[in-house]
Image (tube, rainbow, N blue to C red; front, side, top):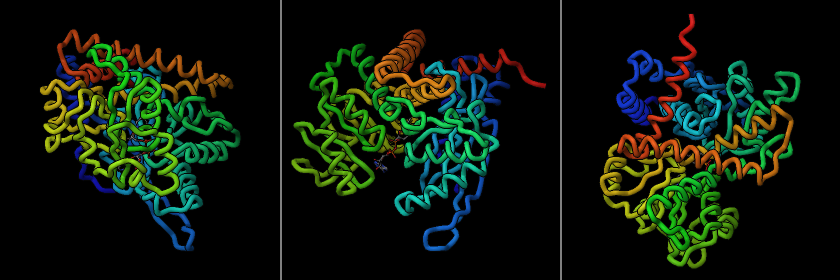
Length: 416
Ligand code: NAD
């Protein structure tokens, strides 16, 4: 697994900033700079052609002072240990900001899912789970979907964990299909949560959302559901993209139709009535709200001065680099940081875990109502720090998240 990635440097510099602002004890800062555990595994599977494939896998468990580790599982060819460590750290702060009783983790496998059959992906997932099994569990570490993993992947994780335990453990994983204990509303939760934050931020910035123009980079789970939720409140989606490129339509496009087109052709491009654009062009479009919902490091010092959106809602993890962050702030662009904006996913994952532990199934309306309440509270909590500190929202969110985790560690004490 490659080691050269800047994501961890960014995560560490964010922690350092929060530590300085919070006047955190140096020892606590040092503790939080390191994950509690990083597990690296080689996943050997039989490929469909009879050959053996060997894939690198990892699970990083950052801190669990506020509850069991929780975090997504990403399948991506260029995944690095450092990137996963950074994402695990972000999860720790995110769970604390959302005020849910989880710590932060992240895992993944270096694999290009587009080159694998469903059978190969199933064998890969099951073998991966078997290798990290003893570190997983409903009160240890609970995986969820992330890039290029979905509800089916979670079903395989649950089944493998349950087979190895000898009984069914639905609470061992979240983001599962409904029929095996998944929660209504989990699939849409991250995208919906992003739009709850956009609503809160728009109110405070006097931005009218009816008719507001929205551009979304990444048209996967999060991007699509953010588009749906934005349309519900009257926004106009003027551009979306995927790994093959983007499309633009000044009159607005229908996300459901674009999804049907993508499912048929494998790309959002060449959609009727739209102009094909590049991902770079999408980011630089004149629009009210820009939602990066794909990869890290998309808004950088190279394009920050060309961003024309009034608001950036980070649906993806780490889409903005620190220098770009500063540039956007100086330009007066309202940026809702990832650790707040995309916390809807882990919030409904928490609801799913609670439902599984109590063997209940809540109706969609209840899940959505509770999600909105949680997201609004998290937004308000961050904003009160922003106002007190006269800071940007990322600094406020980091201070809230790091502060809550540090307080938990202080209260627990250090054993032995
Ligand atoms: P996904 O696999 O469903 O979709 C990813 C999308 O990004 C796809 O449309 C893909 O084509 C596109 N993409 C890939 N490379 C791209 C590129 N170079 N340029 C533009 N688009 C590209 O993944 P997802 O679950 O929607 O996750 C998207 C982001 O949201 C990730 O950063 C993830 O960590 C974050 N996130 C996801 C969740 C969740 O619940 N799924 C929760 C919190 C954060």
